[in-house]
Amino acid sequence: MSEIESLKGQLDSLQTAALVAFAQAEDLSALQQLRVHYLGKKGALTEVLKGVGKLPPAERPVIGQYVNQTKAALTQALELSEAELAVKGKALRIEAERLDITLSGRKQAVGALHPVQQGLDEITAIFAQMGFAVAEGPEIEDEFHNFDALNIPPEHPARAMHDTFFLKDLHSDSGEPMLLRTHTSPVQIRTMKRFLAEHGEPPLAVVAPGRVYRCDYDVTHSPMFHQVEVFKVDRDVSMAHLKGVLQHFLSTYFEKEVGIRLRPHYFPFTEPSAEVDISCVFCAAKGCRICKGSGWIEVLGSGMIHPNVLRSVGIDGDEFSGFAFGLGVERLVMLKKGIPDLRLFFENDVRFLRRMGVSK
Ligand code: DAH
Image 1 (tube, rainbow, N blue to C red):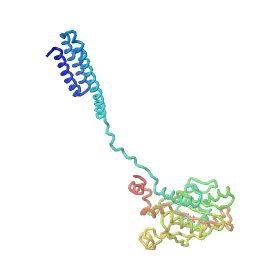
Image 2 (image 1 turned 30 degrees about the vertical axis):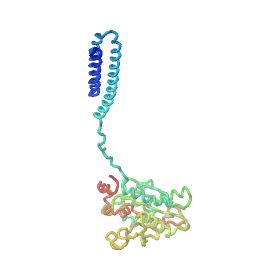
Image 3 (image 1 turned 180 degrees about the vertical axis):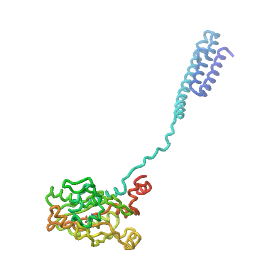
Image 4 (image 1 turned 90 degrees about the horizontal axis):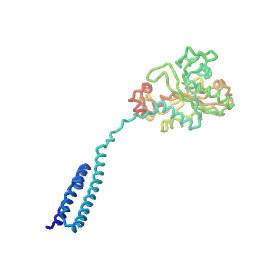
């Protein structure tokens, strides 16, 4: 074999070996070592080039070109492997640095309105939708608004029945003792007075939700509870209007057609007065433990506003008439949701609140 053929053969096997080695290099630093090994100053290619000097001068350019081709092939293969390893290295790094973000987060408990507040809002909204204006009054009242103006004079037995909390150290401007209102009926007086001062005369229709206080505590009584007072004054208001409003309200609130019954009763601030029963929502009026076998459940007090009450705010009872009623919010919520004990509302046991959808 001639010298030049031998050199070409060496270059061919060097190239083959180098390409295999480049392709198998594990990482960039291994590749760098291979570059030095094959293409470095003291590398394998340089070693082969030493043989070029032994060739006759005419053959040198031929082998020179061959060497350049080999060098170019090696350089190209190196660059390719380098690029591949760079990509692979990045992928490996990403994999190694990967964070597991799939751990589920801590749930935030979502709050909600207390069942009594939900009831107040629901009841108020039904009347607002019928056109009643929403009004509020103070929880600290004087005897005039809580009693006298509502036709409950001093010494009237109804005063004793109200279990009033008196505020010993507080007195009104006229020296009267102050108290925690025992019902929302005084809002009738305050609202009628304010309305007349602004508008001169009826009509007015009002719904007044709020807290009331009585010194009493057992399964069906709490010292603080909620009432909604509803009243309307106009010319020719009759008990038929009262009954129609009640029928609509109670059927809307209980989300079904409930039967209602007005039973004659006595309240100082209405004449005539009636207690209102609904057909039992638990047994469809067949008679059960809740309605004590009667098929009826008492839900509120009502009547035609007493002429003395209208007179106390300066409305002429011969020209105007009005109906009024007052209901206990806790009682209506208990009936709607089947809650057996009033005290559950105020103990705030989370198991009860969860069941009522207050807390998750
Ligand atoms: N104020 C009464 C109470 O708390 C409830 C009531 C009864 C209100 C009859 C009224 C009514 O407006 O007409 O016991």
